Image 1 (tube, helix red, strand yellow):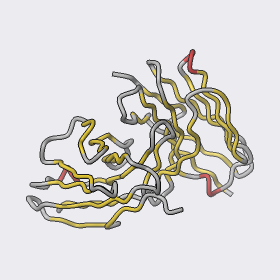
Image 2 (cartoon, rainbow over the protein chains, first blue to last red):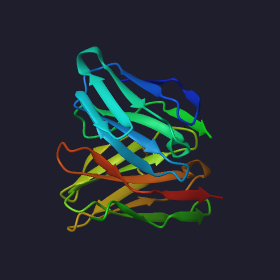
Image 3 (cartoon, chains in turn blue, green):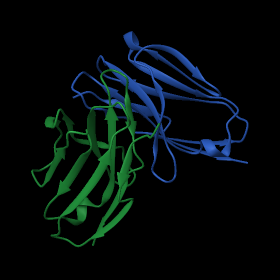
Length: 108
Length: 111
């Protein structure tokens, strides 16, 4: 089956720093989403981005479908950005396959 | 616009018991999927319901079953609970190709 790998697995930042999270996938996908899971377990949808670039405030994402990777950029990080970031893909089978996750900790 | 709502938020059950979790999809969404997330891992797909039928199923035993009602809400039932069923259970709703929206989850502890 498709493999979805994220890097880095852990990231520690000071408030105000920028970061880039990467998601590699091993097969063509119909759908790719980035989620932020907060400490209470809620999965918050950040981007629906099967291809191209999108921006939402301090966050932006780029998916290069032909090269099978996606990037999530976080600028001017805040303590509330802490949590686990997942990318998840759908290969047309009506189910999301989640990546390994990146655990982000932002300190003041 | 209400998002995906799940109930209860927390639940403690004894081994061998049965449990029912509930999910109301986001307004306008007609498809409901259930995921299990063990501690420290990513969510794993259990099954998906559309038009009141199970459309897709992951690698979970028959102890896991579900239902979708005409108003698109859904239930997840787990029979003969095992300690290993302890996890966060997430419900997601979707509409066509517009992505998935997740609820806050139900944290199930089996003792």
